Image (tube, rainbow, N blue to C red; front, top):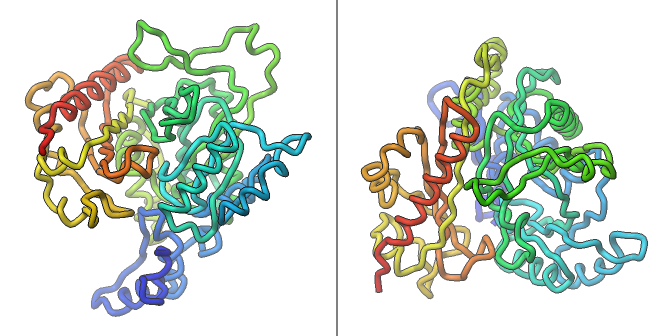
Length: 443
């Protein structure tokens, strides 16, 4: 179902506007934290005469194909298809000088949240399989986007703009995912593993990221607001390496001989989310810089620009903490889900017992295994001021059909060092996974 439609042929934006008009008290502004509803809320705001950057800007930002076209960057071999037959006509006609598509590539729904339905393909067969899979499990009215896979450190960039002026920005390190580290795309996904702020990249590369993201945001038609952008630093002077003595990837400078033949660093835009970062990422930034993105989004919606600018000022000695975001993904069988006795679980299963399409379950913060982790490992959990868990169908993330993928996000704070924060992330992740694997298996 299109999120701009309520399923009965009515535009969702019109329904929102009608609901606001019928409310007995004055409403000074409206906004949403979900990418699914950005366009509809903008439509409603325009109809009500409330502040909004406009429907056109959100239409571009929520469509990954339009985002690439309006990025102000070389689009490479990017194209979109609405069927496998369209894909066949593109294979062999896009890409390099010989008329062959260059692999690996990334394919993803043009409209979708996060890493849902995002796959890497290393050859034509994997590309056909990925596109077929996306079309089968997601409504893709604007098609499936196929674009170059770009190597280099991945980053998030959070920007606060007022009338085109940059009030605050930060670059957050986004650690390699399984699709980056796997020699084959089989089983590799683009689910975030962990992030860290402050970034370990050189200041000049961070400045490149911020400027490129600012220009991309302005090209899409935005002037004010909070923006959560994702990109890669191509030809970076740094990269992640695996050290068997260290329980996390280490971001370090490349050797001089390795850098000698490299081009200058450049920024490859993945996407622009024209809203505050998710609650986990926003909480991490709050502990690091003192800037509350969700408060700023509310102030933007009601055009309280004085407070908006005042609250965009970070701590005097920002960043004050080393903050990591641990993203733990564990596949849980249907039998385990039943054994864990999760409230509301029965209503989310289909006729064959597996998850219904486009289903998500919020797992209570006191439920197993987090409650047990707080009891048994207080030395870890004292560094975790915030955590949240949701479960989604595993096959959306290249997992086994019929099982559920638990996504737990934990904000890990250390006043000591980047290394200490990342060590706590490793301890939290391992302990959480072990407890969940030990959960009752059911029958």
